[in-house]
Length: 547
Image (cartoon, rainbow, N blue to C red; front, side, top):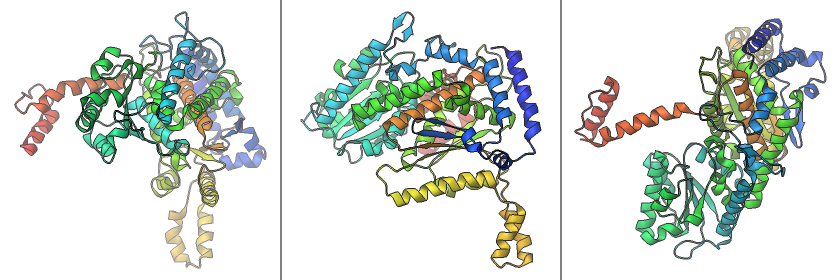
């Protein structure tokens, strides 16, 4: 990266913002009747509309200049070529290989990893089908009806989100559950009402040492042992891990252990054997369709020109908002109840990847990096935090996601849902002036005095940016596309900020401190000297409360 060229590109964008700051996005639509066509991109049956953002063709030109100054295309090729783009851990980031169906080799340290990927994929598919068919059963010969995935972070958020999103494709009579929180209420509430004889647990932890996961796994193991006997453990557990010794010590058979590689980051691991619970739930064929959707986006991201490349445009517009307009947050609003967990999934993908304050070489970042990502499904979010989005003092860009047709839902419901989504998008664009507010109130027959009182409260500034992802239907292939689009968007932004999106050292400090505090909490007589006053006081306060 030429940092002087990048700084100059950012300066040009700042100057350009001043030039267009007084203009409204609605003016751009008036000036260009074909603006929607000029500021939208199609990828098969998926449409990305970014026309409601305050930007022009000149804006895009400056953003493409920034991308080239940051050598985005070179860094993109390094990503796909297996270079060690995760420079702090000296690893590639090749989750794309997990969904590669091109037949081409993917090299890591001189080895083509595709044969191993395909072998593991086939092993996952065979196990998933055997569970679904009943060829693999519990200790008492019962067919499994409940699959409980035990993991945390990327070992939970991705599969849990996808299983909810694709619930119409889950086999009848099969239920997928996900336990992640070390709070004992999580696993207790999950196990309540389950039949142990029909329950299969999948423990997902690469090292088989993740504190929260192993605490929950131990509780699940004790539950099976108590209900079915210790000998039943081997029949009711599988694992996704690379630590065969620890898995064996837990009591899981080698033929029920699935692995992945150190070039697969946790938040990108749903495409690997970490997706085993999803593969069982929706079936190997649907899981393959999910992978193929991701692969199609990989090909698009790698080969489409910048001007028609959806992840590139998403990333550039995000930087335009974050750094040039100083918008600190990004809302993601799926108008699809089954995507309820998608914003939470994106929180980890985006905030754990780009929540960094130093650049790849360790120097402090000269500019703001990742935004705060949040969201809930529409229309629920309209009755929660949309008030702030419409009239708050902070401008929050919004990504809307919606299907053209519903999956196993009433069409009249979906028409109302679709209308709500478009109405919110239009409202963010148009707003309502005070004159328009006064006319509306006057039409209601209010007195001028009452109009003077209410009009300021009815004004909407408008010009609040939003983008729209419209797709035909939320099926496995489409979900794969959507997830991969956001993965690559996050990578694009990391390149422009020159940060490493594939490590997460911020997660480690809390783990280290927790390990030090657990003995002090468990031993009521342990010496608390050396702790800060607040931590010591809170531990002492807990001791007093529980006697």
